[in-house]
Length: 122
Length: 122
DNA sequence: TGAACGGTTGAATAATTGTTCAACTGTTTA
DNA sequence: TAAACAGTTGAACAATTATTCAACCGTTCA
Image 1 (cartoon, rainbow over the protein chains, first blue to last red):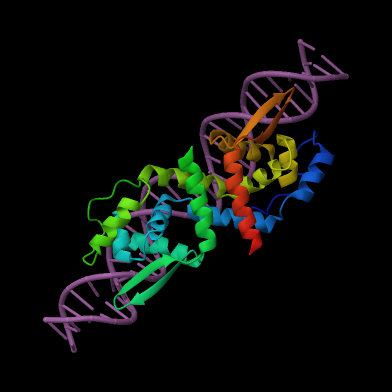
Image 2: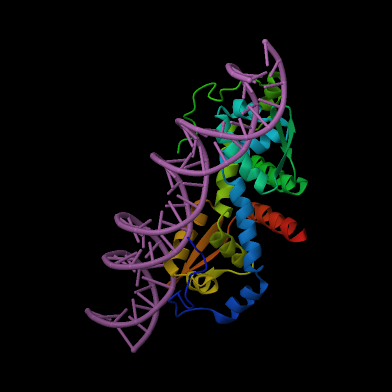
């Protein structure tokens, strides 16, 4: 569903703390940034993909390896790998009949690992 | 869709690097942890919620404030706030007719801010 | 060459999810 | 007390999405 289709003053509110709201609005990152953040998190927001990623943290793997690890079909894994490829989170390398996948973006790997550590701390 | 309904050897693979796969399997966090990580990321994986969160980084706000900031109805905002409440990411405080929301979990706030900084660096 | 296999892809299906709408609760205040 | 308003909620609807299935491509090797 489109997120931009809201009319002005669609909130139907009377009690708005205008001064605070304006200060907050000015301090917030711009809309596009927040959409990008959400898009990135959405990629991490599926357990098939988090399982693929945490496997690739350990080693470069071919599609069969991943399918075997996750106990899923090659097709299902391949679909998810496509999403990870399109978002530049993993890269692949072809060798003979096999395609080997590994992490592409260390930047993003760090974000993910940070979250994982924080969560397992608790 | 249930993620656990896969048969053993559903991958239909012959070429599996067994030794590597076993090493990776042993090193991976357990399934539940990865599901939890995915669940957390899923909450961040919607731009309405990332916008609410980045607003709450700046100030405690009532529902009308947020609705006005995002140009959305109170109802739509309230539904998203419920999700953030259930995952203990925000807390609320009632004062008269108004309900004021603020960030609950500094832990999670740090994860989110880290991601935001990394992304805006690039 | 052709069979076998690793991997990809598009369409179909089922499940999940975000917003809308209408009805509702609780608090204030006229 | 009754109207007005802040906020919540459940059902309905539309959109998105993950997996399945079947067909396909490219490489190997018998």
